[in-house]
Image 1 (cartoon, rainbow, N blue to C red):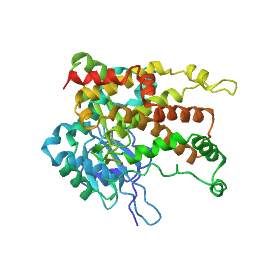
Image 2 (cartoon, rainbow, N blue to C red):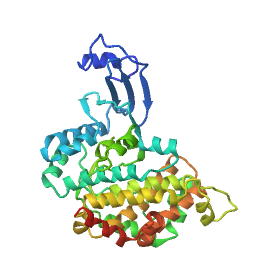
Image 3 (tube, helix red, strand yellow):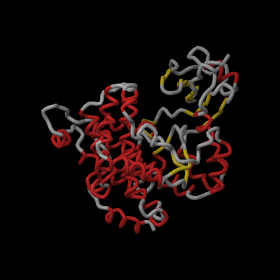
Image 4 (cartoon, rainbow, N blue to C red):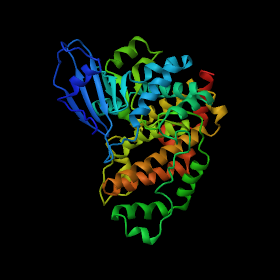
Length: 393
């Protein structure tokens, strides 16, 4: 029978693994956090803090191996001296117990997620966004077209698709009347709207066909997977030129050897969702009015989206030589991310309401008209962004 962690046995587990001593005292009650994994935060009074994750077992007492992937990325960064600058970007892994699928990491009580910061402040400092753009550019630049790194990850991962195209067409292929009887009403409404525009699916298919397997990608860049030092404002004032120490990219469970535009597109979609989730929805209002009345207006997010892209290009200027369509592909992947997020929400039985319809319309603009959409979401043209590469070239 699989060993299952709990708040009652986790300290004994740490002692058995020789990660703490019997005389260490808890600083506060153990906090259990129910996410995809079962997470426990254990803090001792000697200023040692642990995040212990256990992957959930299925009925056959097997796991997907996601925590193995997170452990592997830590090993990867430490395996190659050329990647030493990336080590500080990830959480420190202390141990991995593969038999029980338990990962022990150093917990950072003095850090907040980027999502928490934005929610508390209700504003979006462009310097923080630029720090994220910088961090992501380093990951992509240092691993770009490195076959040795690709082989290392492929051979050590439990996922044999780590360097294959992700099947984001799944669930978006054209479906016939027979399938409609097997899915919920909201899913039917989603497909009816999605299939109304053949150019939308054609754009998604083309993205898939031209997907570039080029470098290490995080593949799940949600704002909740970005940690920020709680003293970030003070640090920025003291050292405006170096923001690399502010940011950590966590939860590498779904890493891929993939397309950098896909990574950046997922991140930009997170900002757009802040706007779309704040829409004032009323059946009496048309889409344009609802977008204009959003409590988090797009204009408030434009500087951050632009800062991410500009900083990324400044710190990886050769991406535009290697990948001439990178900027527009990023915008299209942001549209794809919005579609997949809407699709996932429906699968979890969330309604396909006016807000979801607005999201799909925005996604269509991003995918089918990336040039125009770029100007709308960043306030800048592609030429403006291309001009920034000369700063760091």
